[in-house]
Amino acid sequence: MTLDVIVPATRPSTVDRLLYSFSRNTVRPDCITLVSNEITDQRSYGLNVRVVSFTSEHYPIGECDVVLRRNIGIWCSECSHIMTFDDDQIAPPRMVEAMVALLAYRCYCWGHHRFLDFSRHLLDDILALPASAGNARERPPNAFHLWLSAYGGLFGAQTSLLKKMGGFDMIFCGRHAGEDQQLGRRLAQLVEGSNRIYVFEPPFAWHPLERTAWECRYSNLCRVSHQLANSHINGIEVRKCAACPYFVAVSNDLANRELVFRFDPLKVNTTIVRLP
Image 1 (cartoon, rainbow, N blue to C red):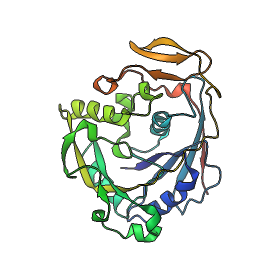
Image 2: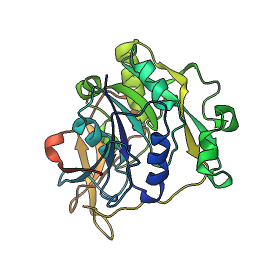
Image 3: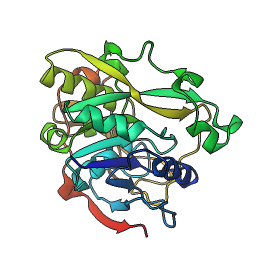
Image 4: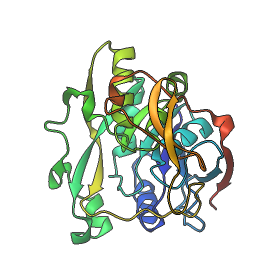
């Protein structure tokens, strides 16, 4: 098994602490893939780190594009398994070890999040804290929950399985809401024939209470306002811009559907650079 950590990195100010935390793990990932047009100069802390920059004429970039970034990372991965991880989080020392142990006998798994005020602690102090020092996202962890408890900030799976399923549904590209829960439901139905998922702890990730603003260096969207008109994507009603790739789905029940808008890696141009 080889493990690639896919990070949709839109906040350069938080990536340094993220990479440092992975360098302190008892088991290091085989690769960390930062899907980002924003990372230009970053210390790797001895990790195998790739930066995947990207452009596209087909998918919206520059606003609510986390779904796109995660899919790019999955399709660019050279590893047998992937783990998705958000760029503002911190990895506790045994997180990768726990994920690898789970993926040795499961084709996918959902981890847990612990909320913590990062401003009140030094980074090394956070890495020494037990999970109980943070507020639990799901109560209780290590239990079955409805698919609504699936969060892409800490998720692992076989790369081939995710590609076969179409990855994260691109119909959420203009919303950034519910795409990981919808994937959780699709996976649960396919693998277990259920609407429930099991939330594991460990692994868990430290999640900040404070919000860090996103940065965007490249965008293919209108700078002022969109020229929206009614349209459809595979039968789903959307409002689509006539001047750029932006769209937003009108429906409020997207998470109840099967895969609608499959990601096509041929519609994205990527450049991969390894950090020294």
